[in-house]
Length: 291
Image: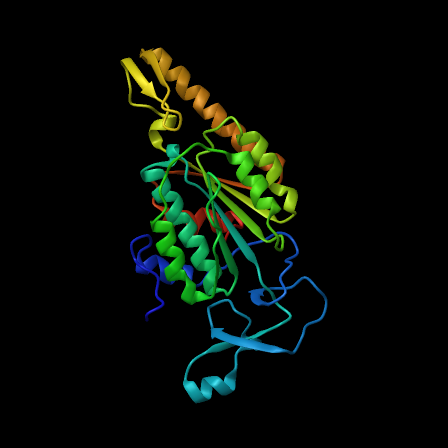
């Protein structure tokens, strides 16, 4: 198929499994077109919209048996009474995300975006630092373009998280689901997280960290360079200092999780070398991010 997404970010086997999932939401959806998320409104419209392939767990009453007899294929009928969902992916492309962290964020964004597009939801891609366009994707055929844009992301600049959130909130559109993918290595992390729920939709924070940021394999006299500002700090690390750092880093990461929970956002911590398949097919489904 010409509209199949490139395989650089996600393996074909994972894509096949993702096709059976959809994004989980806790609040009423605000879409106006035919997606595949059950409406919380009473009653249902009989306005036919489209078909999609049957997946295990779907309501068998929506199978089109005439199409089954004619095409030998199980198809589900979609109606206008079911609301669509807008998924906003806010990806941190600051300098501190350079390398494996940005790659991991792109892979997770690709997985979530693919699930949304297969289910005919709307996906928008936002990055920070600001000043970059926020393209809009709809339909499975758009997965190729989304994947290509995610693979082309480059890390540069500083983490203006609070400003990025303000910019996102100023854009028109329904509440939907906002997913932030960032290392949150900025003094603005708490302010930004506090602002995020202002739109009123669901929020998920994907905290992407490098293992060395939590457990550094360093010792002796070192010059440490800030990835975003270039500022050099000379330190002397003995085992006791490394232990203190690890305790402080763990406490900070826990503070981020607590703040996310306090503002009503889901929180997922991901390391840059994690295998995302058990993440998206296991713990995320248990947490309700996917279902």
